[in-house]
Each structure stands twice: as structure tokens, then as C-alpha cells.
Amino acid sequence: MKRRYDYDVLRVLSMLGVIYLHTVAGALRELDNTVLWNFSNIGVAFATPAVPLFFMMSGALLLDEDKTSDLTFLFRRRLPKVLVPLVVWSTLVLLYTVLQGDAAGARESAHRLLNTPVVIPYWFLYALVPMYLLSPLLRQMTSRMTRAHWNYMMGLWILLTLGLYTVRSFVPDAWELTFTEHWTLNVNFVGGYLGYFLLGAWLERWERIPPKGVLAGIAAGMIALSIFGTRWDTYAHSAYSDRFTNYLTLFTMLLSAAIFLLAKSCLRGKEEKGKLLSLLAGVSFPVYLLHPLALGLGERVWGRVIGLPAPGTIPQQVLFYVLVVLFCIGVSVILSSIPGVCYAFTGQRYAAACKSANLFALFRPKKRPNP
Image (cartoon, rainbow, N blue to C red; front, side, top):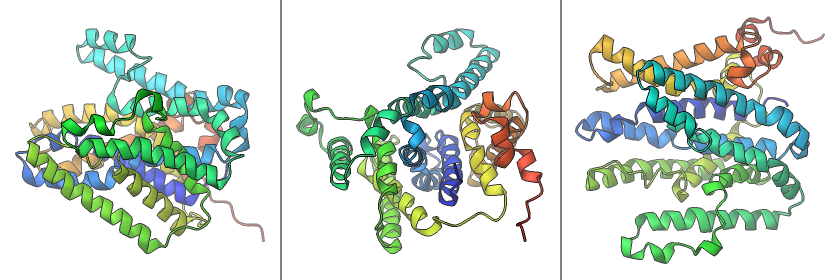
């Protein structure tokens, strides 16, 4: 599959956004440190679309590819690329838990592995695997759908999943049942997240994209709403609120869609001149898998070196975040460069990694064009 410049940019930004979301999770629940809280809140507003964009890119690519309909290809090639690294990294997390003296907790997590991830960030893969399982059926269905049927399907998701969820989040408790659909009308797609998978494929088919100024305005408006709305809601209730940043709200969907279309409008068709972007995009999956462990180890080292349980100032938070990002990228690139290890930890075959996502790809002389 040919690399896409716009998707590589979105992958890297989403990778950085996911790490930031989990880096500042603790700071957002410490309301006493107002300066650090406000800084973290602003960062979260920009990083919130990271996970939806990952789902959207997966849907856009898979539902536009003929091989997606092939069940043999799904079970021999595509699904193992996700499941093998998930099992390997989950095992490492369990071993780390044992080494921290919590063998009982590790055993409990192992028993619940089929329905509960060993660390919270891995929920993304527990949602992605069902999407992969459904992708051959979705490919067969969507390849034959007219624009009207696409609009109808996405309208159902936007109205009955995102719309009702958003309204329920803000109405008084007495009105919550009024905006809850009867169980026989439940058309949620995998908790609503498969909607993002389909949203990416839907937007990918748009031939007429709204003007860049309109898209930028929507994105800026949703970010501002997230910043000020979250601050107001959190301090009004003395507890962190995600009513403006939850993935199943209309706010997050609009922000994610605007960014996706902006990338399509501004970056589609461009080619990367260097190798760094493709390298970072190529290791985005192992970085995602590694970052929970890196954060845990980082917090322990931080506590010993600095003497504080977590970064307490803006410079400290930025430094901690940068160090975690660099560590995750460095380890992922090294793992991608080792034959026999590459696939287990990254989901990429070694030969493919050598083309764009490891040390050999980074330092390989660039081919000169034929005269």
C-alpha cells in the first residue's frame, strides 16, 4: 500500500496526542494546581481527536481496499498484526506488575484478559479488533452503497448514538430517560466507536470538501468549547469533567472530522522529501503499545530523581512528556530493527520495516532517480 502523506502526518500527531492525554491524566484531577491544570486542559483539547483519528484512518484505508473482503487475508495477515503485539505487550505489562510486587493483581488481570485490557489505554485495541472482524462484511456492504445510503447510515450514528449521548450528558437527571432510546432501537456500533471507523471511510469518499476556512473555524470552535466548557464544568462540580471531550459527543466528532478533512484538503498528494515522518508514522503502533509501560517506569524514575510523585509545574510536565515520547520512539525503532523480534512487538514484518520504519530505513542511502 502506497504511503499517504496526510495520513502519516495524522498518525504522528495522533501518536503524540495519545501519549499527552495519558501523561496529564493525573494533573487534571489535581484541581489545586490551577496553573498546571489550565495548561493540561488546553493540551487535552488539542489532543482529544487522537484516538478517533486512528479509528477513522483505519476505516478509510481498509474499506477502500479490495483485499479487505478476503477472509483468508484477514485471519492470516491483517488480524495477527494487531493481536500478536497486543498479546506480547500485555504479557510484558503483567510481568511488570509482578515485578512491582502485585502478583495477585497480575493473575486477576490475566484471568480477565479476554474482556478487560491489562492497562486502560489498550481499550483502543479491544475496540479495533471487532472492527477488523467486521471489515470484510463492511467492505462488501459499503462498496455497493450509494451516497444516499452512506448519508443515511452515518446520519443514524450521528443522531441516535452521538446526538442522544450528547443531550443526555447535559440534561437534568429527571430528563435523562426522555433522551434514552428503547433497547429495541439500539443501533450503536460497538459502543459507537465503529461509527468513527465508518466516518473515516465516508469522509474519504467526499469529493467536495468544505472550504479550509470553514473547517479551521469548526476545529477552532470545538477546541475553544472544550477548553472553556471543561474548565467551567470541572470547577463547578469540583471534579474533572469530560462532557466536552468524550469520544461519543458531537463536539469530538466535529473536531475529528474537521481535522481529517483539513489534512485531506491541505496535504493530500504531497510527498515527503525526508525519512523522518515515515519513520515516526511507521512506529506509531508500537509507540502506542509501549507508552503505558513507559509512563509507569517514568513516574518511578521521576519520583526517585526529583523526589516528587509527578511533575508539578509546566516545565516539568513538558520535560517528562518529551522524555517519554523520545523513549517510546527510540525503543520502538530499535525493536523494529531486530529480525525475529520486529513482528512480535510492532506487527510489521521485518522486510516492511526496513523500507520505512527502522534504523536501516532511516540511514539507508536515498535512491537516485533514473536519468
